Length: 597
Image (cartoon, rainbow, N blue to C red):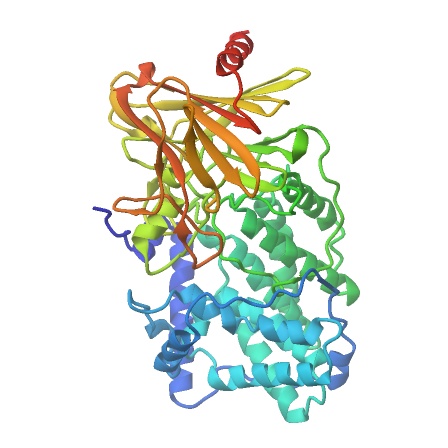
């Protein structure tokens, strides 16, 4: 029976420093003071006026259209509306979504107003579309009075809305004096609230970056006032500091999430372009680090332009679906072996667009490791732009703790579980305990092959410690051999899993598992320790599921093999051959010869 998570609040409190506790107390006291003023019908802020000429002089950042994609609702719109109406006049800190309420992430998505952003910014949208966007934004402000309702629970969400209010001021047609005052008031209230509720200390992460972007846009509008200049300075100072924290020196993500890496990079590009265009701050020094981040993401992309879904993903966008800020141009790494030592990934490219990724990196961003998954030594594999061995994704954050636990956990990744445990301890849906250390121990290559060896210590916390070692042998003729071995003394349950694309057709053929995905074939075989069972869509216990997008899950085949043996005696040899079965005896012989050198 899977137990529910511990309280996220109390786990965060337990790990907090004295300075963070004091900061959280101050935030609570500030919220109470503002609540008391609002209860008396008094405005919490004296909002200064803005000269229309000051707004007219600001240039919006450049937006690049990538596709005609529209924002995707991830829950029933009627269910979201009922939830919003239920709490519309409730002060935000009294709102505690329950298990029968929709996922709060699905409630926040439409309130980011990115559908209006598309109408306001995309070329080809006429005055009628921009007029509709203005109406949407103004109606949202009217329906969601400051600090009432669910959309003020997160300062991050406020940070994402401030640029939309700015775009409306700049791009909406026939903005009246009254409408301009409404929009400026919303910007001021949002920026003021962000300043008092920044995600700091243990909460540093992509939320902080969103909030700082909101401060910069809000500060730019009110730059002729003291608080506006303070917001710009504060947002720039934190972003400058956070860039090295969020984007590692090899360009990879500290949060160990590819989706949030894209999100963070785009937020930085958006802020950088806006600041430079309006001469508010010079951050040319950001470019080198951001280009490293772009090169990192490009290294994982296949022919279809897609990357593995590693770590958490909520399908969020810095600007809107289908559009992006003006990004710098990075070069795709050309080497057939590329290692990112700080973020902990190695990519091997073979013929026919074959891409293998090997994860030997950390769990995530300490101290909470919020968006990392317990996927040490996991691999993914694609060929000809078709994903074969996949990372199953995220599904949902809230309201379904057993599914959240599964998709974050080790069992949902292409690696080995020991004694049905994750490689680290899931304290809550967003907090990990007892993080592991992982690393790449050996890289060797020849003209036609590469050998990678990694290890992690996540199971050394067990009563009888176990260390997992994985060696991946890759030949350019598209043959792969994976060896999983263990250090330890007592018997344990070892479960090896390889997750396939949900659209893959799977059948047994002459001792092989034949996998066909859109005409691309792979053959998988366990050489010595038992055989693979094909599991798809099991609910008790949960196994064999894939989440292609946030809020969506579907059955997906997983090849699973389980044995109980002494750790030092347990070895899995898995052969994966593209196109046709290979000579496994010869493959293993070549592997052993090279591995033992």
